[in-house]
Image 1: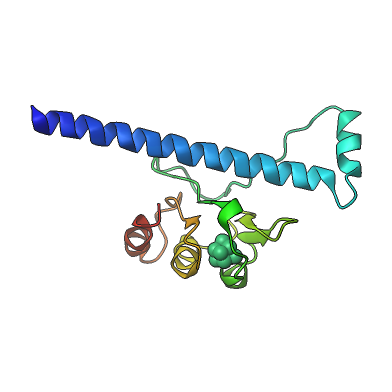
Image 2: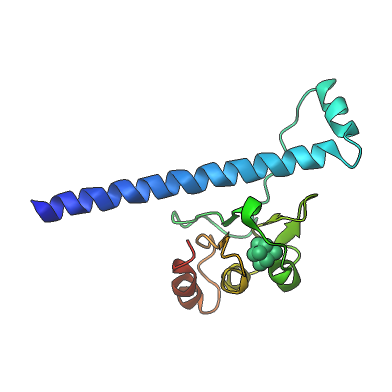
Length: 151
Ligand code: SF4
């Protein structure tokens, strides 16, 4: 009985963790989209107000199929200390916003292992590599294991 309750509590915590991750990812994406729309002088927002909104394209890999366990990587952007580790490692995955805080530019801009390596190097411990969509990569199980503690 107690074991069952413990299992339920664990499941509730996992659901709460997933909800938190999704909320953070949505906020990051909305922030990124607004910054892109605003442009350097904010003219993009004025233009947006006078036009129909078109949803930005989501960067998805075209040559892989979903494995059902995919979890998007995310960054606690506001806690980034701008140490450059992630952007130096792969500037197709990681980029800085206008406040020089890192965000995920393109989750599929490089191999999953780059997400894990960045999480390991991140001085602020704010990178969460998620889980890969493509499980065919070399040593993918090893990288998933290494990335586990950062999710
Ligand atoms: S490694 Fe971490 S602290 Fe450094 S720039 Fe990237 S997200 Fe920010």
